[in-house]
Image (cartoon, rainbow, N blue to C red; front, side, top):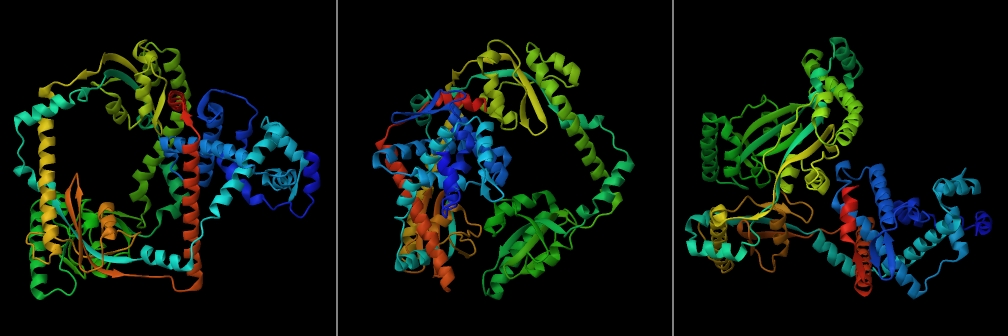
Amino acid sequence: MLDQIRTVAQGWVGKALLALITIPFALFGIDSYLSGAGNSATVAKVGGNNISIQEYDNALKNMRNRLQSEKKIDPAELDSPEIKSMVLNQLINKQLLNDEIKHAKYAISDEQLATYITGMPEFQKDGKFSQELYDQTLTQNQLTPNKFEAGMRADLLAQQAQNGISKLGFISNARADNISSITNQQRVVTVSEIKTKDFVSQAIVTPAEVKAYYELHKNKLINPEQVKIEFLLLSATNLITGMTVDDAEVKKFYDENTDKFQGTEQRNASHILIAFGVSPTPEKKQEAKAKAEAILAEIKKNPKSFETLAIKNSEDPGSAVKGGDLGSFARGAMVKPFEDAAFSLKVNEVSNLVESEFGYHIIKVTGITGANTDFETLKPQIKGDLMFKKAQEEFAKQAEGFSNMVYEQSGSLAPAAKVYGGQVQKSDWLSREAGAKFFKNNEKIMNLVFSNEVLKDKRNTEAVEISPNNLVSARVVDYKAASPKSFDEVKSGIEALLKFEAASKLAVSKGQAVLKDLREGKEVDGIEWIPEVTIDRKTAQGLTELAMSQAFKTNVAKLPAYSGLADSKQGYLLVKVIKVNTLLPTDAEAQKLAKDELNAALASEYLAAYKQSLREKIKVTVNEKLLISNTENN
């Protein structure tokens, strides 16, 4: 085979298949072809073929490395169940394709394989294939040529099969235009909610219904197993008090980083909008102004009420649910009257009424960043940052010793507390879920706490990094097994649940009646519509995902068009579509790009359907226990 490689490397097809390497090599990496080293336990079985835990670990490692190098994901998410599931599914799909390839008799010639390998950048030196580099790379990675070449051939065959399916994804110009007209459509809409909470007082639930619910569901109403623990934390934050930074260090840092302290001034602000609509009458404007003035008067009486009043009264749907919070913005991002007012206020100062084309605003500035700042102003901040940096460095020095001590002296946390200066703390009763939240949503520490070694043998857990610069070890001091909840424990909760369900039914019934009247052209009193917004399939303009989806499902044969949707949590959502705008790409290049995107999407659907059909045809089983135990160790 390598003789052929040396020959073909000089030929005209030396780089013909170079692009294909990105898929197998990027997803699984060179580790995928290790010659049987490591754990051979089976994590999944595809037909008559096994996927070993070692293959899975190698693929997972390479996926993490690739995502980190491409900076496509938050490092904190590299251990997420979604990443691990995606990797396992890729391995399963790969094996499914391999089985199908054998039956379909796809083929890659030795010449094609040689061309492919000689074109790989991993084996190139000065733009040419290097036999020496090839041999060296394989040796360093404990690979045999036969194993590596077999793996490459399998990947090329899989790509060949996938390409054949993908090419079925073709769409005509007429259908592309039709889909584009739907995809690029804009709709002018408004929505209203018939809220469940407004019907709770009308809902009636009897004691018999509460008791019946308990009897029906009591096998699910369980107090989970719980523990009381003691734990020891090694934290960079706790080390700060022992760090020293003098004025000379602070001044040196400021002088060396002056560019970091210059920037475009930005404001963090919240607002309450009382809208008066497009082309309002004088009466409408006066009505809106009076309402805004009344709200402003309440804020002046109680400045802390701003957020609550925004949630209750603001007619900007995007910010109202967040207490009026607009986030951070620079000059030029807002309409002129709003901008001038926001940039004239101090932090926590509230404006008088500000009129814009949208209505009357009440603005509160919650933060100012980016303005040029002198040394004396920044001195405390810089000193704090430098002290924390030193604390991080000290934490890194102590972390290994701390980890070793809680493991080696696992009968108590006291020795580590004495050496590292921490205080052993005690918790109240904690379930797995509550404990994970207690430790910054870290499930690993609670999985260890409930393990036999820690729970039954009363040993310390290993040191777990619950967040950057924070290590914790815990031990169990008391345990309570899972137990059924008594009726008295859950009575009030069941009553509240049943009342909410009854109120939801009342809200839905009311919503459906209102929708019927609207569709019949009747006037309906008491329905509060939000200000009209123009949305497309990518821009929600503050609407919820549910409202946006419903707006595009609404039949617009006759305008205005109305539709409704029952929401089990909120009540009933009413949607009114006022106008429809159809926007199509006009120039040839944009039309071609749109069609190419549609072809790619269709090809992706065909390929997904093909893989699903293989799963239905070939039995796939996953060793969940092995996967879970392996996950806890990774």
